[in-house]
Image 1: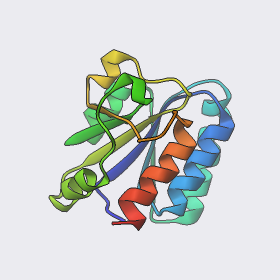
Image 2: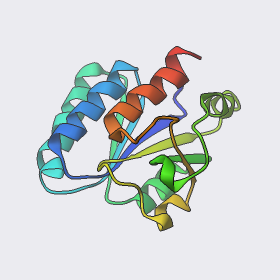
Image 3: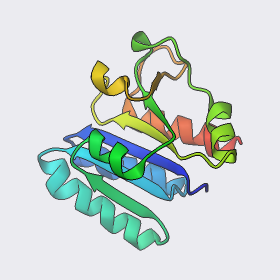
Image 4: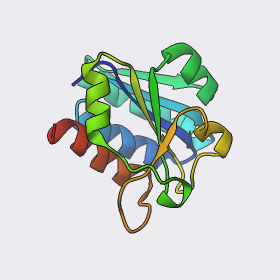
Length: 155
């Protein structure tokens, strides 16, 4: 998988979401996984469990940052896509756009909110909010699986 693709789980409080998100990302051989703004048990148990899984897989990176501003400052992505419910954007997810950017050797970050809600507007304004073409929003786990299938498997 392309080492310029970064997958971010942001604003998460559930241990299960962190662990399952990591499992899905590793299943698609994602090299760069980021968790930011983990709270409570997600920070105390979920992130260390995710780090262990990534370490056991080998040749993968997991980053843990306090907030989205740290992610942007340190990773310096060329393009950022925020996966949001369709009621927040008219932009539809386009795997070809992602793959074209990766082929141009751009750093691409795809961000998922750890809750079923959306990112605040001030965060979405830092990148491009985009939505899957589904009848309703399915949360970060299902969205991650669909997007990685589109970007990696179908490419």
